[in-house]
Amino acid sequence: MEMMFAFMGVAFLTGGTFVASAVCIAIAGNAAIGAMKKKPDSFGLYITLSALCSSQGLYGLVGFMMLRKFIVPEVTMFQGLAILCLGLIMVFAAFYTGRNQAGICANGIKAIGEGHNVFAATMVLAVFPEFFCILALLVTILVSQMI
Image (tube, rainbow, N blue to C red):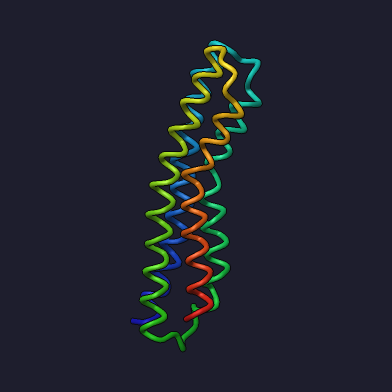
C-alpha cells in the first residue's frame, strides 16, 4: 500500500506536469497560428513565448528526480502519503500557473501579431505565475529532504 501511494505521487507529479505543459503550449501555439496570419515575420517571438509554457513539465522532471529515491520496498506509509501529497501539489500548481501563463503568452502573441511591441513586457508578466510553480517545486525539494 505504501509503495502504491509513492507511485501514485510520482505518477501525478510527472504525468500531470507534462500534461499541463502540453495544454499550455497548445494554448499559446494556437495564438501563434492566428498571429502568423497577420504578421508571419515574428514567428521567432511566437515560438519563444509558446516555449515558455513548457517550464511546468521541466519542474515535474526535477521533482521526479528528487522523489524517485523513495520508490523502494522499504518506503513507509508516511513517506508514501507525503509523496502522494507532493505530487498533487505539483499538479495543481502546474495546471493553475501554466494555464494563467499560457493566457498571458497568448495575449502577448496576439498583440505582437497586431503590430504592438509587447514581447519584453509579455515575457516579464508571464514569469509571475510561473514563480508559484517554482515555489511548489521548492517545497517538493525541501520536503523530500525531510522525509
